[in-house]
Image: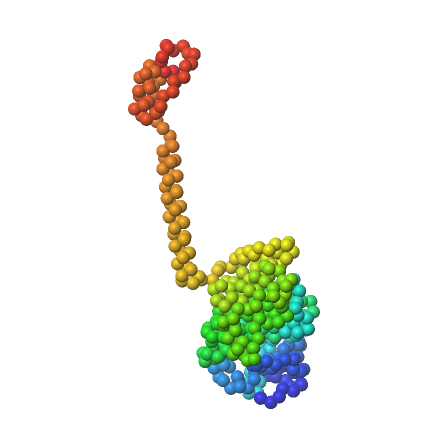
Length: 372
């Protein structure tokens, strides 16, 4: 593909204004949509990807899926098509800067500001996850922040399109500093992989540096696999312990030890905010309301089922004992002994298992006779 120059018209519709970014898979240009009269961003694939028919098919399919993600924190995808020997997607154009540029200029960020940006980032990922899309390459370079602090995530479609080819060959998918341990091993990933990447971003926002450093992508990937990140408080002594605990849990090596889903991470971040404002130090990670938890691992699920059946059995035993007591304490049929002598009445009652306790009263009946 020849260089895309200013005023180049892509696919007969998008007039290029200038290049605004470049990445491992594509270059990004600002352009005018001559059909709808609006500014857009056009991402044009590098030729080496355009020559791979399988990749192009995945790219087209996932770009269409990404176009269905309509959320305040997700960059909207408008269109996809071909240009010369390659392919493009047209998306929402945003005024602002990447989160990476913001961090270079201002990190470490304040804790409240980190939570504000973090919640938006997690909500974007959570929305995509609920629609079956995992980003796989979340990093500050793929996050745009405007002057009001509003955040949007881009590149959902492209990241997923490249995932199959790269993971099938055992190579690393995602930028090394932000990839999850399972990505570093070339394994298939789930939503919790995105949450790990978000944990790295949160760490970077608060500490002003990344948790792992190395001379190569491989050395960094090995650290993601085998090395614990440094405690955040050693780099940021004033970080609130609840917020630190949230970030460190997101960075757990084992996906099962991370937050179950994006909703739970949002709740934890908001709890950290509340703890900072109220002076609390305890961490309460409540499940996100309205979101079903992800399936438990087999061993844990069996343990939970054993506990449920044990509690149920104990409940049945207690219920049976209570019923027995109630039956024993139920209504008693008392023989009619009115008018009988006291001795005879007492004998009748004792045969029925009852105890007679005579009480003397003044009455017109003969003495020693039961009156009631």
